[in-house]
Structures are given as structure tokens and as C-alpha cells.
Length: 246
Ligand code: CA
Image 1 (tube, helix red, strand yellow):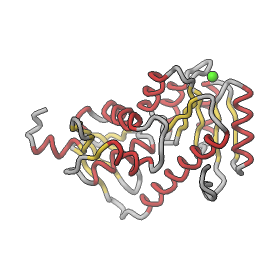
Image 2 (cartoon, helix red, strand yellow):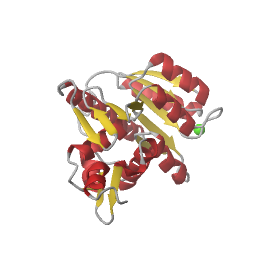
Image 3 (tube, protein in one colour):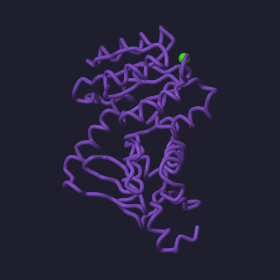
């Protein structure tokens, strides 16, 4: 059972991009019954269009879509502005799924899923983003973290590489900010799950690996260092300490 009062506090605007009408309608109905405003798009291109038009608080995105697949949709909507994405996937598409997490989905649910599971996951994601926004709002203007040539503007929650803005998803930003805040520390995957996700994710520690892969691809391979058998740390400090010998 999910805890009582597990709601996000305020009704949110949610976009559901799903081509199977029965699933789309069931998901929309359940989220509406929780008080959210829900819009449904039935294919990739109309999903991208609806996301740009509505600027929703969260997107529920099916991986297998006609017109434009879920991974491409995810990349396009994340390029516009960071928005939390919960991806829906079939049980046998695990490789696609891990690519999806690296592409910028924040979490995923495997079909078939229960309505209760969906609501719990949506609310957890909304809470996580709201909490991160609150924390960002408490930062003094100009507060930043630096990893080599990568700068994280904490109040604005924006990332720059050599002064050029790079779009990160809410989860990617949070993960990198967590590592960069304690550059000398090595975090285990379990610690990162607890600190960044704050709840159990279905993919477990592989979600951490996928998001690390996404950050390395978007910023640079050295932005996060792997400590084999332990976990991850911010890359810049070690690179400097070791004379960038990697
Ligand atoms: Ca589908």
C-alpha cells in the first residue's frame, strides 16, 4: 500500500502519450480521479506538439509509439525544457528501456502495471521535482558547482559546458549536483538512489548506471568517475588531482 497522503499536494498538469486507447484512457481516468489535469496524445508527433503547447508538469510516455518512437519523443521534449518523464514499457524491451533512461526518462513502469503503482510513481516523481525546485529556490543567486569545464547553476537548475547551456533532465541535474556537492566522496549506487530518487525504482541500481551514461554522453565522459566495486564520484576533482591521467 502506498502511504496515505502520498499525493503531490497540488493538482498537476500531466500529458499521457500512449497509442493503445484502453491503456491511455485507464491511465488518464485514474490520474484525473486524483485531481490532475490530463491530456492524452495518441502518437509521437502529436505528443511532442502537445508538450510544447501545454508545458505539462509531468509526461507519461509509452516507449513503442507510431510516428515517432518514445525515445525520440523523450529527447525532443527534453530539448525544449526539463520535464519529468515516466516511461511505459513492455516487459521484453529492457535494452530499449535502459537507453530510455539514458535518453532522459526519469523512471519507468513495465506493462502490465496496476493503477495504484502508476499513481504512486507519478506522485513520487512530482514530489521529487517539487522538492528539488524548493531547494533550488533557497540557493543564493550565483551559487554554482563546478566539475572541470562543467558548471551547474543551482538556483536556475541549469548546466553549462564551456559556457554553453546543456539541457539536463530533472534527474540528471539532481544526480550530478549530488556528486559535485561532495567532490571527494565516492557514492554507492544505493546511496545515490536514496539521495536522488528518494524511493524504490523498478530498475534499481541500473537506473543510476543509465543516468550516469546519459550525463557522460551529454557533458563529457570524464564528468563522472567510476570507482570499480564501489560506485561513482564527481570526475573533475580526481582528474585534477591525478593530472588528468585517465
Ligand atoms: Ca504502444
